[in-house]
Image (cartoon, rainbow, N blue to C red; front, side, top):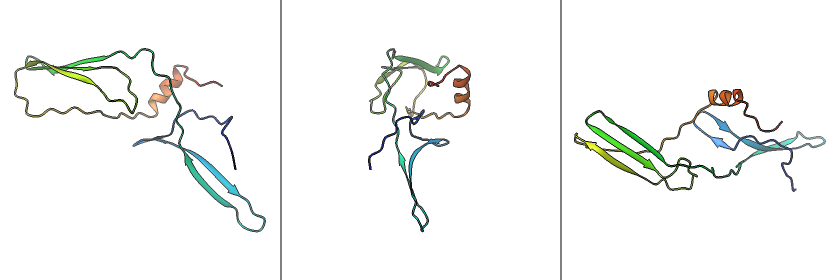
Length: 128
């Protein structure tokens, strides 16, 4: 049986995080005359295609310990797609201590509640 979702508002993409999940379901209920209804639901994944940002400038950060270690990180751009390879370089500007181990990681940061309230306070809305 064909169907579509015209007129159904899907404000957010499907997301499964540590603290928050955004899910969409299709629920089907078959009512029968003398028998109890049959109900089934199935999750539908929603992806809202976006436009690549027009300004995607490189990032340059510097961290260190005063007079001992200064490291500069450079990344090609600020925004990445999930399928992109993150490219950049690390420059050791000052090294006066012995480095035994160094690790670089991409960390996922998940926010909920306060970020949404701030967006609403700034007048962020999608139609209406």
